[in-house]
Image (tube, rainbow, N blue to C red; front, side, top):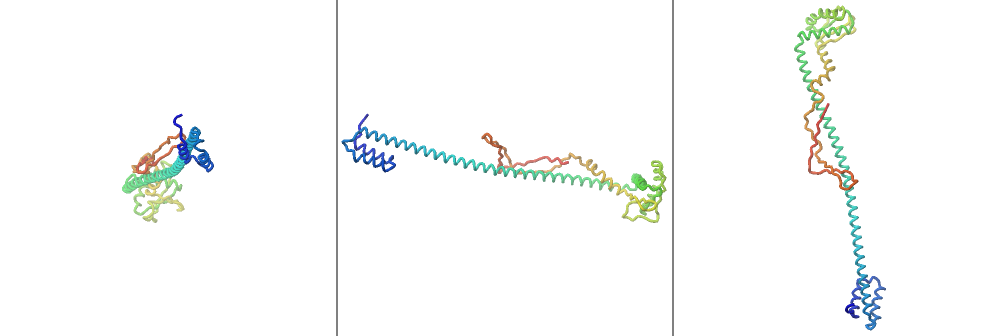
Length: 301
């Protein structure tokens, strides 16, 4: 068993251990009474050893209990930190989702606005191009007004006016400066009406009343002057432009033409990432400080 413990050694050991394990007054009185009522003669070393072992085991159990308590406290704090972390992360994800939706809305609106501007620019380009062509055509028509083609066109317009009035004795009023030119067209006009339409027409020119400079080239009236047909190369040209404007535009600018426009969309980089944990949704991250120029071809018809 080894060396026996003396009374003094046992007394010192119990007093030392008592400082660690004594929790209440009853236990303290019990140990103090052990010293008071036990004498050196009544001292039993083995009993003292058992008492010391009991107190030592109690100290060990208390130490283990403290460790368990500290471990539980650590785990509780760790769980609390994790909960705060996940709560903050969910809040950040929610805010990011809202910002991402706002970014997509702004991108869609910007793209619609750019397409609208591109289409408007294309329409303006087409319109300016058509106007340039029409102005050039008007100049050529004005320069060729005394040519044979202009006379033939005027004769066809006069025939159309006579057929529209359905009067065998129409009266034509002209400008004073065009009297001689239009008078020379009447014989040929009567022959064409007779040969092509089997209509005998007694067309005559009113040499007493003339049209002013702001009027059309000529007017063909019925014999009672209640109806008339206004005939002019300029008016005929304008009517043709209205009727064939779309076809003229298609011939000048094909529908599939592309405008060379410098289009810049959102200056933001969107990176798509997937979380490592299963079951999580796909997230998007906007990296600040980076720039991505999104370009899209505009097909405007």
